[in-house]
Image (cartoon, rainbow, N blue to C red; front, side):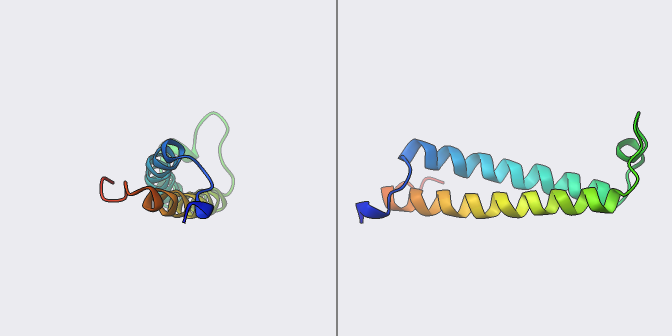
Length: 84
């Protein structure tokens, strides 16, 4: 079972927590850009295609999901999965 451990226990827990924060942040930011929130779209440099920015945020959130799932999988090998 230890052959599946690719990162340390501390890094796995940290990666899981950061991934959850990144998913929430990028998901909300993508939703705001998709809704064309005026404060974000019309700043000093107006954004021409806010839906493209929203898609980029959603792709980033998906990548955080993948990384978070991997880190949680690593945490499950150490027995700390019950704590998260």
